[in-house]
Each structure stands twice: as structure tokens, then as C-alpha cells.
Length: 514
Image (tube, rainbow, N blue to C red; front, top):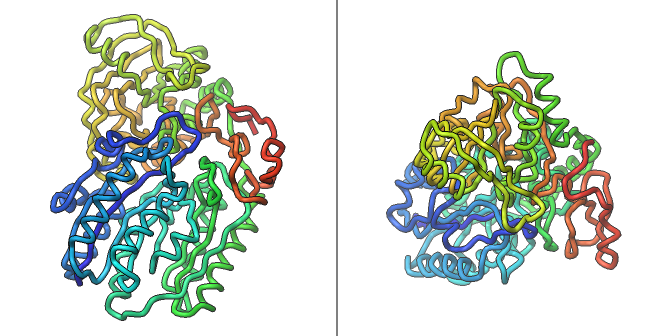
């Protein structure tokens, strides 16, 4: 079977300050940087990505593979028109130049918004379908945070979403989608499809499949994959996207329409029934640090998720609310990372290891109300920022965080980098001289992915809402374009187009302790 393989991934926070331009895809920001053609297989080998699972399946099944291009960038504001058109044109041209194909495998995200296309994946799939024609099967691997459109479902023959958050099954999902593509190519039988939207958004940290109720919802997918159901997916949706397709959905593919409908209805009903169970606890910065100090003292650190500055959801990884709280509380044996601040890194390298200097740490020009922390700090470690992230989420990805440093302020260590990536791997502390297992308190710029590598060592994990660009509660976002009737959080206010402002109460941009 001759199959083209390509990927184009971005999770778009339409409220975030920084867009994803071509440089963002060339650097990767936690993903494998943009790679083309024959170099793709080696670049993604052994990495936890959908495309790597597809390559593994292709090798096992003896496909004649045509690798085209793979690109991913860290979540941020919209993909620029230039980057979107440049990357997609190369993918479409490469697929078209491959000649007659038996199938196409695409590794996508599901929540991409470009400057000129609300439905990034829908446009990608429309153009790929146009070049291969109606008869060539297309299979897609997608993130469980996808905001999936009807246009995307209509354009594909099968799609499969992740079932874990933290996403430790990205490669496995790609392998599953590729296996289903092989079945479609060999049988020539296209499956029936069923697509259901659900009625409420869930805050990102509590979508984790490490906790109830998401754990049970995803475990229940196996139970509906019977009686002709080839695959069924629950997409929780990425809530920070002001587009009509934002929100959760259930999708099933089956040998009959009845089976597909039954599976999608069962997933949707289970999700709706779980609404009240998504309630949980968050802390304001000072309360989070005080709680961690009181809980510390046994085996392993208390880990605090700085969820409102999660670069995996469009955060800038540079806000300072929790850093200030650590310093004000005179926290000991504590560490925070990553704070992206190239100027602080430059000054640290110029000052030299072992010196003490005055720094203005953190802050971001697009967030003028979040000031840098001006303080004296000891330069404890300097690094080139090369990190081999071996934990379950990054899965062997080689990260380039640029020149980096570890600064010490009293009992608080601050890992500062030149480039952005979500703090989701213990190696992202170790490379800067911080042994995470030995700390009493760890603050991570992440919402959930950190759990994959930090939960095994954590004494406890809590979620904090410090000021940042990604509000914990979706109801705090200034939506104007959602579909009518969507609840903005579990048991929360309902969005109405005619009265968007009244659809969101003033909970405060920093989140509330609940």
C-alpha cells in the first residue's frame, strides 16, 4: 500500500498574546522541529507523537511510505496566515506529487485556528481531500482537546483521538489510526460515522484522565467499541478558543450507521451525566504556597501547577505570581520553572556562575499588569539549554531551551530559559542543577502534562490560579462567538450570542479559590 504521511499541529488559544509564526514551527517549542521528507522517520523515531506511531505501523505492515512534512508549534495565539499557507501548501503539493496513493495518514491536533481560518483542521482536510479525490481513504490522529468541526468529520474516513491526559498515548493513537487506515485500504469499505456535540466546557486541569470523572469516561470507551464499532473518541475540547466549534464532542466510526449512532450517543450521555463531578479545588498563590509548606516534610515534593500560565494552553511561561508568593513566604527547598526571560539569562551568563547580581525576572510585554520580580539572586548554574526529555509525555524528545540559568533567591531556585516549552519533564529541572525529587515544593508552568513524570515522585499535587493569560475557568474568558447554549463551565452560565457579556459573570481574570 502506497501511503502519504504528514502532520501539522497547533493548539490555538485565541485570547493569547503571541501568534504562531513560521519560526515557532521551525523551533518546535517542545515538539520535534519542522522536518521534511526522508528525514521525518529518524526525527520522530521513539518520540511520543502520532506520526511516530504511524511510521511504526507502516513498517510492520510493509507500506510504501511517502513522508511529506511534519510540523508542530507550542500552543499560542492564532497561526499566522503566512505560516499556515506555507506549511499547508507544501503538504498538499507533496501529497499531490506522490502520484496515485492508496491512503493518506495525517497527524493533526484538532484545535488549530489560523488568522484567516477558524477551522484550521477543516481547511487542511478540505485541501488534502481535493488533491487526492473522493476515493482515497484519509485517516487522522487527533488530540483529545480537539474542537472538532462537522467539516473535518465529513472529509475523513476515520479519526482517532488520544485517551490520556497527560497525553502518554500519542504514538499509540497514531498506530491505531494507521491500523484502521490499513483495514480501509484493504477492504475498500468506508465506515459509517456519528458526531455529537455536548453541552459544557471543563477547566483544563480537571480534564485530566488521572482523576475522576475523566478517568472513567475514557475507560468507558472500550465498552462502546463492540458490535461493529471500529473506533470511538471523546474530545473534551480546548476551551480557550472563541470559535463556533469550541467544545466537547463524541465521534464514532462503525460498520453500520446504527452502531455508530449508538456508540456516539452512549459517549455523549456519559459525559453529560458527569457534569457535577468535575468540581474540584484550586488555590490562590499565597494560599497554595502556605498549603504546600504545611504539607511538606515527608517523601517527595508538593507540586503546584501554575495553570494560568501554562504554555501548553497559550501561556507565556513568564508570569511571576507564584514566584512572588514563594519569596514572600520565605519558602525553603523550593524550585519553579520554566520562566522564559532571555535578558535575565544573558545577564546571568555575563555575571558568571557563583556570582550574585540584580535581576528583573519574568514579566511579558503583552501583560503589563504582571510585573517582573526585581531582586538579588545567586547564579547557581548555567546551561546551553539542551535537554533530552525522557519522561512519559515528551517521550524522548530533544528540547532546545536556548541559553539557560538557575538562579537562587534565599531558599527558592528559579529555572530561567531563553525559549519556551511546557514544564512537563523532570529533566527540565535537572539540566539546570535542580534535583526535583529532593525539593520540598515544586512549581511547574503546566496544567496537566507534568503529572505523567511528576506524579510518581509527588507527595501531593495542587492547582494554583496565579495571574496569567490562560484563565482556569472558561467562564472568565470574553467569548463572543461560541455556539448558543454551550455552558461555559460545569453547571455554569450559558453562552447566548445576543447577550455575550451577560453570559459570563465577573469571576476575575486570575481565577477564584473554590
